[in-house]
Amino acid sequence: MVNYRLPSKNSRAREESVTHVMLHFISNVARNTADPFNIKDIHNIFVEYGVSAHYMIDREGVIYFLVPEDRVAYHAGRGSLPDFPEYENDLNEYSIGIELLAIGTKSEMASIMTGDLYDQVDSSLIGYTNAQYEALNRLLNGIYDRHPNVQRDRKHVVGHDEYAPGRKSDPGSLFDWSKIGY
Figure 1 (cartoon, rainbow, N blue to C red):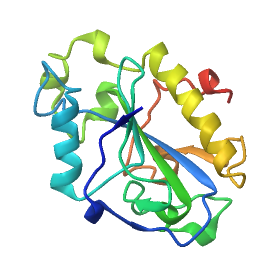
Figure 2 (figure 1 turned 180 degrees about the vertical axis):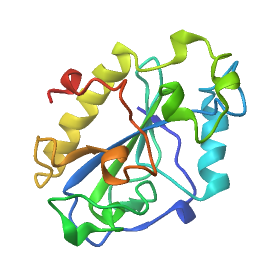
Figure 3 (figure 1 turned 60 degrees about the horizontal axis):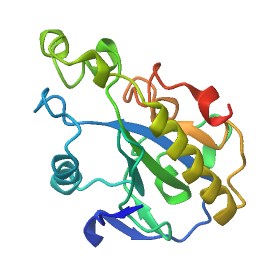
Figure 4 (figure 1 turned 90 degrees about the vertical axis):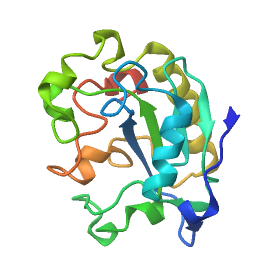
């Protein structure tokens, strides 16, 4: 695991128990189609926009530690989960956010880039790698051990697109939930 901490202003002290994990994808493809997964560029995106996640997993399966789990990272935003109405617009407080360096489908990326720009992206950069799934499984197993309130099911391990449908599209249709046991 590589320590690549975000500034403390990108998180705050946690007051509640962790009960969920939220999965995301991130890239810098709209600004740089040739090198969309440049770690420094993506770190700068977090800093620039004041957002954060606890972890980031690159294409080779390297896990980057961004925010300590005892702090609230700003990754979920507005949204709700049907089985947890009390978490409406507040899932950051109860979750650990994991960003995977990936690019979704053309329609999933339409809010941040034109179709013409998307067509310039090397197809090998779209979707997820086996190394990412392997690293994600290792990371999730550690989270389950450290946070027994995170149940190993799809109600507690969720995608950003499930929490904020219509607003967010990650981890998207290319994410294979079966590769992490769901």
